[in-house]
Image (cartoon, rainbow, N blue to C red; front, side, top):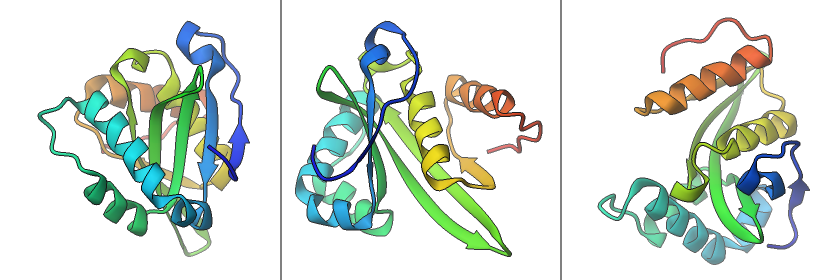
Length: 155
């Protein structure tokens, strides 16, 4: 991975202790579209299972709509990603995100590190997410509470 911002979040949890977060803006995503769509597709298949229909074309289409991307690497290998949709309304910056982490990295705070990197990078006033996974929902709520955010709306 080259030509993108690199954030190294704090933490020391085995696999996630060496996690590096790479931040891709629209220009970097466009320049590396083929490689990034293949990487994201590979992570998504591992994270959600082979029965989930994923393709590089589908990911490429999404990256064209949501070019702000974070990739987590551990031991030099991509282990997670996070898409962001960013917009502003009435002076407030909104960040709506979706995240996936390879099965081997799940439960090791990699998703938290991706969210922390997005918050640090984009400085949103409001954060939104969507999940059917109760563990992901509890993790999100914990992340918000640790930042002093007491109001968490259903998602």
